[in-house]
Length: 278
Image (cartoon, rainbow, N blue to C red; front, side, top):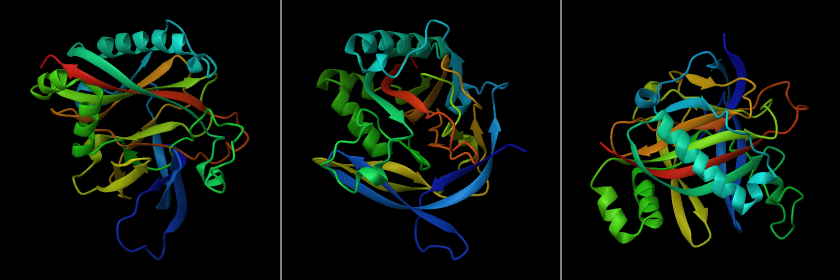
């Protein structure tokens, strides 16, 4: 038996009579994205004593014994420069095939931030405005086309032409801030348990453009994994796009029953374009 948790799957087609559905909103700038999601209870395996193989599963965790970071520190531009150097070191440590890395995004999240409440008045400034809400829907950050669009936006024209000819990907590195995770932990679907028709393309609108993500559907064959009470020196590394054979990894925050009064989860995730030797 694993750890009991709830997740919210995306929906394609008509609703099922015996299922529970929730409304979910994601705000980007002044744009509100609305989704109807299927809420499901499931068992999640704690892999604290089993390290997934990055080369075959597309995700793993590692330990950063250099230092930990607070949610206040990562708001500082100079600290973020140090943080980026550490990310590049960790990535190359876990995958010797890495040739070059371009970090392009950092997102600091707290599970007290709530886009459902923020959507009621976009002009109001919430107390936790410096945080993004945790992502409580099962998804992948990119589709084939949106990943290629991202690479083009990150690189110069010359670099883009060179990278596109070889093996490259988009990787997310995630870690807790301030304290160990007691509620809304990040979890993954083992991508070897995913089938090609398990997801649908979903729009995510931002000011001035429309992006696309993978929205994963409720399927009984998924294998879910997590780190229970993940410490601040533990780091998740997971693939969100790969032009070669590395699996893309679906993920979501979990809703753990009985943790409502636990300290808030704070975390930072950093996305990067990664170029490989081969």
